[in-house]
Image 1 (cartoon, one colour):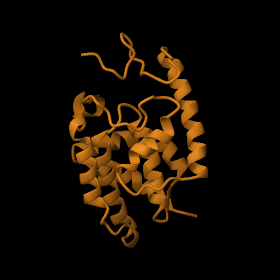
Image 2 (cartoon, one colour):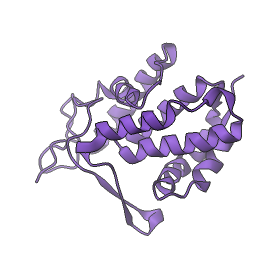
Image 3 (cartoon, rainbow, N blue to C red):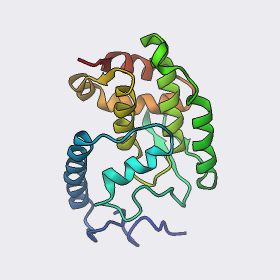
Length: 199
């Protein structure tokens, strides 16, 4: 069965501009993402719920994908080199809404404001990895998740150190992968380095 998110016979995502060349779409997406980030930084949305992840994706990608912010309608897996090309299976698309509700139930009652940085990072790792494993959108999940994480930690007096993030950006995605199989040391080490108290 063909994937409705790709132009038939290509590996290029369906997009609002009708771009069929993957390299051109990558450049266009990066430019639009940058513009969207400027608007978000001027008027940051509140990240109160796992469902806000969908709204954030829409803000970031509405000028790229016609389905921005919409729960995917296909199942997804990814082959990961760091797992010896083992597969990571994301949530079944039919259960995504239920999974997001479960994430809210699990984390919304946590006293984020009143814990030590170490405790904050411990719970943040699990929260962020839980969201990543759901992978509610067809494309742009990891980029959206990093912005979501930045907006989320700012509510509690933290921020992401951009210099540290730049050095760790590739490792961060690998950290999500390790976390997906229950190994949190990698992601915890990275977040301890890049999440700092706000100036």
